[in-house]
Image 1 (cartoon, helix red, strand yellow):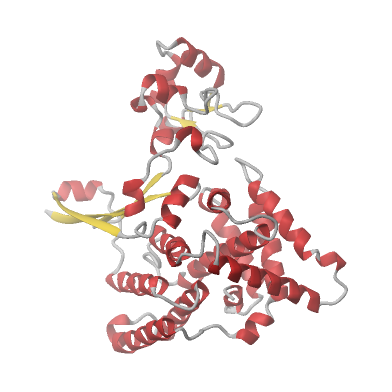
Image 2 (tube, one colour):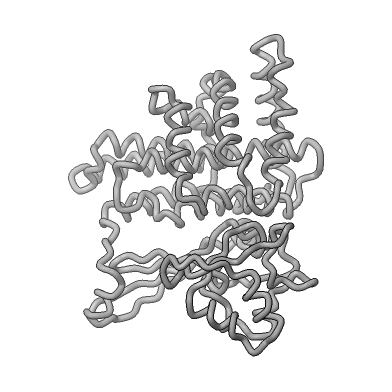
Length: 405
């Protein structure tokens, strides 16, 4: 027998699909794979309309049982099974049990390790975004242990366990992000400093734990005292690098949004605001980014994202979803930089958008869901983001830290 733990955040337990009220339908713009059993069920359905739609719109792929066919979307990019009320007629008329595994599980996710299963949901669903960001209890974790027979633990997949030292790093990172502070950027910088410390001791928590613990506790004290960990002079010199980061993110994310053009439209607003081609003095670009930072501070003080839990929950979600730093510590700074790039882009995006209209919850939900569509559902995005990080750093592995301020 072996103890197997299941971890479930509160937002997962509370989630309910809002159906036709969803801001961005998951039944639009995506390739929807259908397994062989579901394909046959639809084509030979006793429901004449569903059978007719299936025969006309299920395109055979025959790439294994789980990818036997795919759904042909209509001219607007919508699934043909969607009715006039934006509801799935399969679910409506045949029940949830008739849905394909793809449709039945989205937006639910599950990460399995040898001794733990971690339940999750993807931020590409705007209702998940709402649950994560705007519920103060969203990132509280519920744990349940069960005894599994040895053969069942083997069926869980011969998966690796996250090393104990990495679990300690995860807990430290979690507490640093969760700590009260002068601003959420301070929490990110504290985590960056912890990572640099861990690299300095070669992640030897067994031999250097007392030194690491003292450093970590010092960071917590500095955060809670309201002391700034950001270098104001370095932040002021980062405008050119920030512009480069936005250009790269525009190429890798904004130009390729399948479900709607929300991110592309917002990215164009950023480009119009910066308007680099018309600037005669290089210092003018600095003033533009000062304006973005001032607008961000306004949002953090008085808007729908001003409650302390909102941005903390977003970053805690990032740590949780990848079980930061995961099984390998060798990539820890690269993992951190991906989080920083996400945060920097969303900060810039929301700041510029709110210069035109008051920032509302729905705007935040659509922004994060649309952005996450490309950063969480693309097999090549990590490689492309790593390329972006290398280009931004330009040979100095710490340059990306300037994106935090």
